Length: 308
Image 1 (spheres, rainbow, N blue to C red):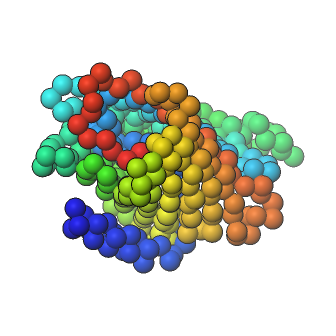
Image 2: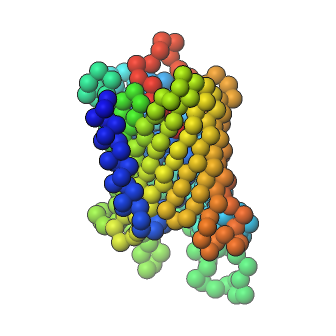
């Protein structure tokens, strides 16, 4: 266990060193550790019971046509260490919107008594559309703004998820293929190693007292040619019932959060974010809400993974 502590703190140090750079353009949620399948398809292999989650994020509240995101995830365990699920993500900014529909699969491999490695993949169908007909134009007949057809493109998610009784380490990509548009506004999909979006994350739960735990988690996001982005999150979990947390993102975002177990197998989380960059003059902050539910087995699960 002492070796695991040392490895985890070296991981924190490495992430902190890289995180001096600015953030790149990806959607971010500060509550990333509470339901990890949103960031890594392999994480569904760590659940031994039927579970699901929904989140909503309103970014830069007060700014007209600002980004907003929604996500839904459902998974269930299958025989012989397999897990299967489905997820739907929606991303919108102004008249541009995108839906990612994924079929999630994971295989869970026991490495030692209480340590596991989960391998995950998910074929994704990407639906992208720009509703230019909703814009107020000086020339409504402008041909550049007449194309509102739905574009459909394939993609792929891949992930590795290593975990034990009080920790997890996650490596994943939610964009293994590169989706783009041609000059004729046709959908194109190809493989380009420089366009792969990588996410490295980890978390550890410290038992400070019988009724008080300290959860620490980080996530590092990288894509070639763009600055790195990192989140650092700390949460105090009181009586396994209420969690109070704070998170910092390297693009000058600060979040406060609360997690409450509202019913036996239902949790609700809320986070509010402040931005200390130039956008703070126009924005009233960010809002995030996440709802989680589960149908656990009658018998106690073999390993309880930190969900923070």
